[in-house]
Amino acid sequence: MTDRIKEQLSAFLDGELPDPESALLLKRLERDDELRGALSRYSLIGAVLRSDGDVPAARQVAARVSAAIAREPARAARLAWLPRPERFTRAAAGFAVAAGVAVGAVLLVQQLPAGDAVTPEATMARAESPPVQSVAEEVSPPDALAEPYVTPPAGDAPAAIPPAELANFLIAHYGYASPLVRRSVGAGLISDDPSQVEVAPPGDAPKP
Amino acid sequence: MSLRAATTFLLGLAAAPAFAESGQEWLARMGAALNNSSYVGEFVCESAGRSERLAITHRVRDGVVSERLVSLSGNGRELVRENDEVVVYLPDQKLAIIERRWGRSDLMGALPNFDGGATPWYRVEWVGRETLDDFGPAAVVAVRPLDGYRFGYKLWIDLDTHMPVRSDLSDHNGRVVERLRFTTLRFDGAIPDSAFEPAANRNKLRWVRQAPQDDDAPGWRAAQVPPGFRLSMSSLQSVAGTGSPVSHLVYSDGLATISVFIQTPVPGKAPARGTTRSGVASAFSTVVEGHQVTAVGEVPPQTLEYIATGLRPAPVAAPDPRD
Image (cartoon, rainbow over all chains, first blue to last red; front, top):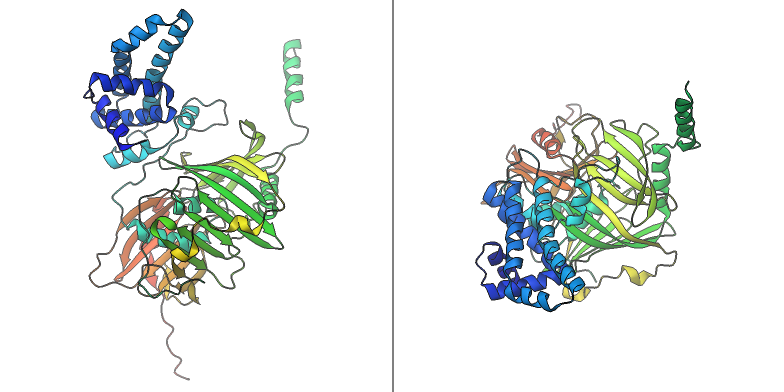
């Protein structure tokens, strides 16, 4: 997803995207799963930041998507020319986009632990990448074996130790980690994290 | 007994397994599978709001364990392990870090024996059977902590292969802290050496070596540890980014481990204080007797704080006047 698309999503959720661009964005939302996921996350961030976790605010974002779909004149005209079954399908797809945003936003808001301080950083971390399906699965457990899936904030406070130093210590710790979580520790080391690993001063022996 | 009650009773008997399943037995089967199987797969790791997809290649051949983890996010990062040597490839930073523990063949050890009293601070529970979308029926076993100093585990063990195809790490209140689930898993008894070659060009990376320099050298010990934790290793070791060797202590309760690093103060550098988290692991930093102390481990942050703040220089034995 390009930065341009991200800017469009953000502007759309703020109600500041021009109508022609909104129409194009909505068309793209219908066929792009990744974009719909991003819209859910962005809407969550906005809703939580504006309302301190109030679920109705997340629903308002979804309502805005529905309203934009309904307002789209070109879309309405296209639907009118379609055979009745396809017209219904396309309209349903539009509502599905809005519903998806609503469900994603509401479920993600619901997973925030009660009483947990919602900082922008923590909100971003929560909303960054959790798959909506996974969260939805946990909110409505299929059976008694399932447990609530609560992803805690990435950081309870500003990082006390620079990420680079932490990575170096984690590498040293990796070999001693419990066999049950060693892969998770390894995954954390090579994850797509923006942190830089701090290197030793020049002079380290190169490996042949 | 009414006819209806009798029918209900008989139906209940029919639904019960022919023999009681044991969590310990399933953990033993899982441990054997982890130690002896060679496989290729992909898994998703979800933690702290992040989701990471990784590929894994694991081979056991002639007693040598090789493993390669590759991030599928596109950053090109990898972790390759062969027995007690681990190399982390960070091509996006043109860097490779080697961690090697010479002579420590117990590194990357097997699961503890849950039946033999090695883990008294956990309770193993048989949860039941559950069908997973990707793998079918699985045996579900929980390893629950008896206090808040450690995390608990819930494991979904494939009935046929005995591999853990999903695991949840939870805190004492049952909140899931991290979830790891396989999406594909294929057994392969003939994985070639080339499967463990990194994709990055080795010659274009800067190599940094981390290694222990002296076993049992640090003059530091934790004056207070949570119940069940014991010192299992201590050494001086080099760590990338530090100018001088770092004291490294490892405490374990038989399952969870904590590494404590003690650094001599660096002039002009502000000491770190507080908690940081990286996926499943947390870190707590503080200053003790002018030294920077950082505890790292897959335990709740308060456990790290408890150990780190109780760290003290070990008393130096007075010279014997008779010498």
